[in-house]
Length: 114
Length: 111
Image (cartoon, rainbow over all chains, first blue to last red; front, side, top):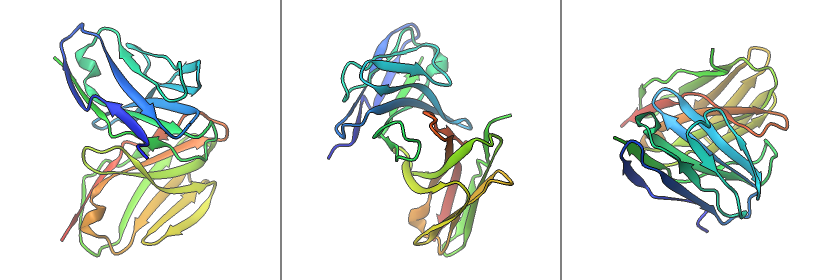
């Protein structure tokens, strides 16, 4: 059982470039989300989705786009990379919107913008 | 002021010690309280989960929630080097879609 799979693991981008971080889960979870983790800031929610075709903004959405065309996939797009987007990105999924359900995280994607 | 405050440490203790990790929060609507453990270069994994106030014990780990003081704790008894990790508290309200995380406390257990 793969759980939550993120690719790539590491990426270096130049300022202004665009890229997509891929996220897939095989648990048939309705709820998926993207977080970024920065030193001293903890995990901050970027975007989330409560089901295919439904997305919403989190705490720090600027500079990022998401879409949810299938239950399994939830890609995160950086439109024009900036050094401030250098961070570790985690995709997560949960069975449904119930706050009490366990959130499962992927292994993370380390992004450096130069 | 952040909704959730957590001392980032780092915290270093000898093997076998009792470890106490804490978070305070300001949002009285929070009902679900979690502790996640994150090893270096890995994603967080759920360690303990508590609904509303009270204590919960799982092996060497005990989670406490005091909603009147807006304070949660994680205790680790007989700490082991394998417990060395970053510990993140997280919480959310009833029906909320979002988890709010603390900054994380980096813990090292020295053999």
